[in-house]
Image 1 (spheres, rainbow, N blue to C red):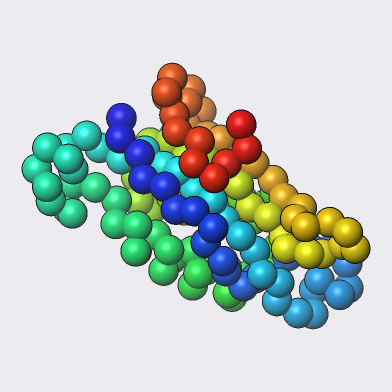
Image 2 (image 1 turned 30 degrees about the horizontal axis):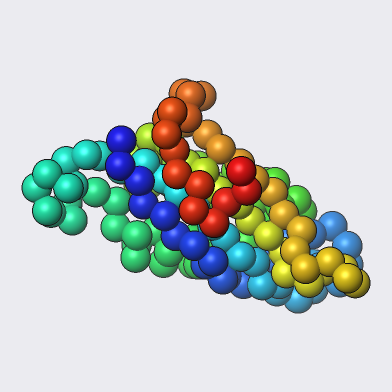
Length: 131
């Protein structure tokens, strides 16, 4: 399996349980790695892979209009978006809120899923993601 990664994607969204988090958008940083068909490299055709520009556009569009209580729920939403709309076979995702607490740079979650509960690939890359 080949992989595409998107590193340090900054998006605005409303996520949180505290009143200050519910009234204003926050900047989130996403790092994604997702599996793509090997055919993309073989045929040199965008139709054989997942277009990362479309992934970025969809994530930005959806997160701009949604409210999540938990960053975990937001993460599951993004993972399912990649499964359902882009047919990704495997997704690794880290999402972080930026500067939400004094003396804390980032707070976030890390999710790794294979489609239908499948196991992650043996040699999955870790660009920009916690190990």
